[in-house]
Amino acid sequence: MRVTCALLISTYNWPEALELVLRSVLQQSRMPDEILIADDGSGRPTIDLVNKYRDAFPVPLKHAWIEDIGFRKSLALNKAIKMAHSDYIIEVDGDIILHPRFVEDHMKAAKKGFFVQGSRTMLNQKKSEEILQTKQVKFSPFTKGIYSRFNSFRIPFLSILFQPDPKDSYNAKACNIAFWRKDYVQINGYYNDFEGWGCEDYEFAARLINSGIYKKRLKMAAIGYHIFHKHYSRHNLQSNDVIYQRTLKEKLTYCINGYQEAE
Image (cartoon, rainbow, N blue to C red; front, side, top):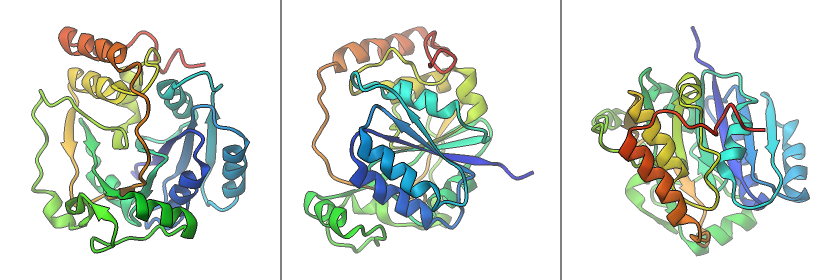
């Protein structure tokens, strides 16, 4: 039976970057079965962009929007996944341009009992400013303006050399991550109490691991190219870390304000 997948893209008020992501989705060798935009309160330009691209896709493009009253990415993600019908969720940030075989690679790596942590190749500031003008979305390991270049090599047969991480390896980055929707629902998704940048993805992954799901690293496949931007404010990082540390200490598997409560 064919496993269905949703591509989940988080965004906030950067339609120029989101457009490059959507352009890269159009070039996928394996189109996702649905595309979910998790929007943390973007303005009219982003809404117009999503509407513009909706007719370009052969699959549904769904837009979950929440009011702009601060950094509430977890809530936006939960609301978007409430729109999903697919078995498997591939999540990226709205500044990650996808390799043409990104979705294909993730689906080949999907395995029951695991979530998958992909990696990213970084584009420097000059290259990022250039592609935001030219709308270029194809790169090679030898493209100028790339660093963390190792992550830009797609060699799938070598990807199998990377084994699942040990159970005590909690850190995970949601810029390129994939998980089964069933596992996500079981732990009640992302924790809506996170506000401000930081730790929401670590805490989410920790609850997956605490519930018996293993983390698998995906290297040399499912390549994402990160568009340069300045760092977000870390003003709430300490409070968010307290939540994360409690999940680690108490081995929590469920959050009380998550997917089910997302309105």
